[in-house]
Image 1 (tube, rainbow over the protein chains, first blue to last red):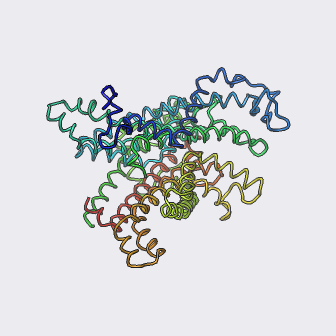
Image 2: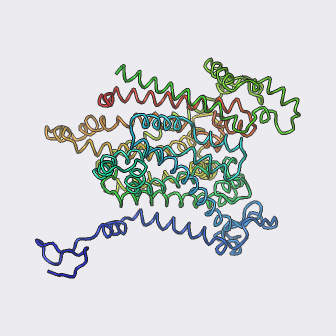
Image 3: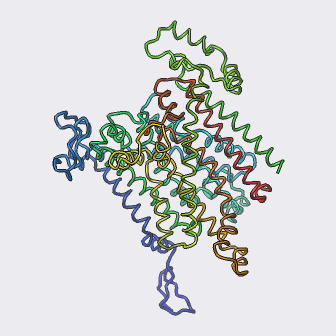
Length: 306
Length: 305
């Protein structure tokens, strides 16, 4: 028997000295390495994040600088394209690559902020409903039903237009509109955790309800929260893009991908790159977020896979 | 079943009242709706006139009760932009939206159920992978962008389909695909997981053991059970599609209530916006109620819960 083996290398008596049991961390890391979706999604999200952080270094031009003498230059793969503007220029002569690069910032900031609001509201409601049950549960379920009945895009549009279209208004309006899914998911997980022995033990030990919620329930929801949060960022980015596309989200000249598609729509028949480029960027980021979220769920809780 | 239906009905009524309060309050978000209605260059006399004409000077509760009372009789007042009753304007346009919504739902179901069934018969094979990939990509694709790409490729390059308007069935094909594909992932996943669950159950094994044909077992014994939650989802999805049609209608210039809502928001035509929000919410409430009842009818286990 090896006496100095670390805990992760405890030997199994029946199987001999060569069998080493992996630690839970190792199991998860191994699952992650084998999960293609998680890796692809993770890379897409990481790249977008890096592009957003290093936007000033990566963008060849100022994304706001207009030059009407250089309107609608096509991207480099066209005959008339130049390497000075690798992805061409838009209708106002702004460098398209720079706008797409800065667009990463807008999408990530907006997506993340909306998610923070939505997940905070949804988690609070979900934990309360799942833990207390009864009347609290009924009230939360009622609020979820009411929220789902309202057409989200339409209400968001009305709110943004009536209050005034700034980025903050878009974020707050959408954040207060998409918490329902988080609430439903967290409620279901909380119901499961509530019946665990360690919660009963904490109750028996006389812990306060707040303490149980914050130190017994919440940490055990962490995996779920990460999954919900990642998926909600993707959804929030899509909604922001739709709002900006309809001209009632982020206002020009901000380089939001949805807004760029909206601005390019007029010229798309002759200059299709104006909509295909920002649309592809949007698609890759949201796809990455969804793959990452699904991947984390598969890796942390493979038994719940559907 | 009757008790269950009554309970659901009561809940739906409560939701409907809450939603109506929200859509009533929505147009008051900007502060004074009279200023919003009067426009930017209105004098204070004009604003005061509008305030009295629309009754904005009365207490909020009275205003709500009056509005709700008239809304129950399908009277949403007059649109300041069209100078016509809101009900008539919406009535002229709702047909397009309903047609688009129902067609999109049919499209989504027609594509996703066969896909889900195929994926469930051969789990973890290439068929399953393709179906899963389609659903993952579908969820990430912005519907307005998908619509624009279809316009360029199918409408302009290949000249297969008309790109805007509502004159013929062909005009609805691209909008239907653009709106409907968004529902495909949800339907497909639900069909697939439902089928996987049912296919591994005892009664399927018994049916197979008795020597019944595989096709018969699949459709008569398995799909029938797996489809129950899909019915509920269909009602909810139709509601989402009607709500989401605002984006698609504006891409394809379909003159339904989504497009009307978008234009009305832009020109601060508040009574129209308010009425459309209320109408879409009410349709959603009615659809979920219907799906709950159908579900309980199809699956008696739900009634007891």
